[in-house]
Image 1 (cartoon, rainbow, N blue to C red):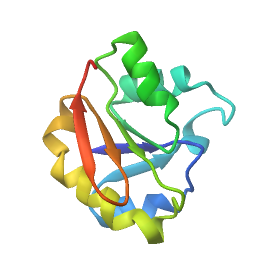
Image 2 (cartoon, one colour):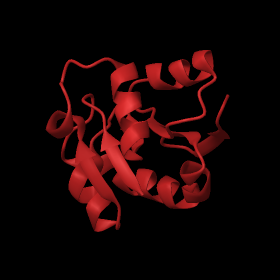
Image 3 (cartoon, helix red, strand yellow):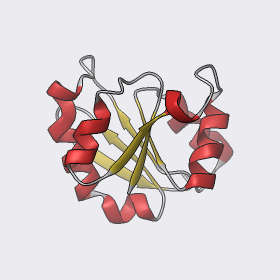
Image 4 (spheres, helix red, strand yellow):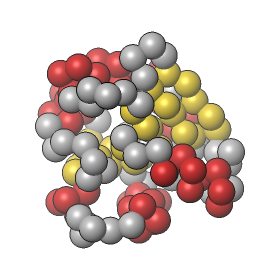
Length: 120
């Protein structure tokens, strides 16, 4: 799986994903830091990346548009640093790998992770 890290998350997530065997890139390295969420989603679809974000707008966009891609994994927590949530997010990626590969919205918080198949 390839993970596209949104601007609202630190590039420090890259080594977390890479050490778990996932390819990862931060949006600032491949696109305009001021790009809209729609632009980021379009890039992710074209390049076959899963969007990793702290922005709840991605889930809203998926729901409103009834889009069936891209997969999005969103973290819902106050402390979004890799040292705090890295293991939870990596475990969610592994737990829901099949769903993410066929397009899903995965939400991770400190208590649980859940997946919804797209479109929602």
